[in-house]
Image 1 (cartoon, one colour):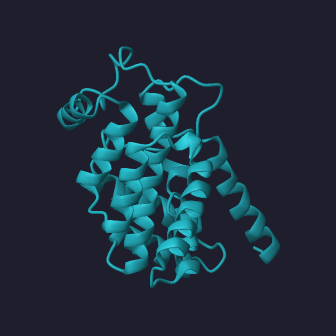
Image 2 (cartoon, rainbow, N blue to C red):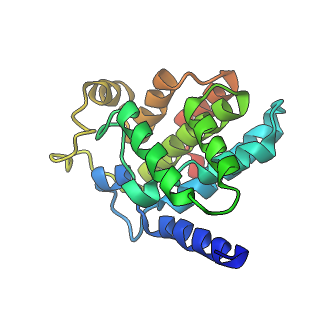
Length: 211
């Protein structure tokens, strides 16, 4: 395969993520003309990473972070967007690892790209931890934005497994808001440092569409 064919093949594969709608928003019956795709989530996570890096002066390789975020959802081209309420982290990790290997086989400098994907997944380096936290915080911020738009009806969640999760129900009763619930969920689950916690709390306490 020529270099040109490799580039186009990789581009066309990745382009498919523009049409993969984020499953969580479908599960929660978000009502709007269009809801976020995986590709849009990747872009927003990269922009969030840049903003946090610049404001808080993290000692990390930001180019590596941006690259890591760019490829961390490649497996969803094959397996789709599976939420934590649909599949265990261990099962998803195995499925994504296999999918990414197949996607990259014979393309570009795939060993370098695949190693970055695995680094993100293992979350042992400071860049991987930072990228992972940006990925999770971005999702919760998007939930807050949708909540502020009034696009989620908590009385229309009969078929939503996420809604019936004990932890989710407990936080919904405490926070009295879908968007605030997800921010609180992230704070309790992902081990954020003080800066990520501060950003999450600011979003929880403010109408972020009006900041």
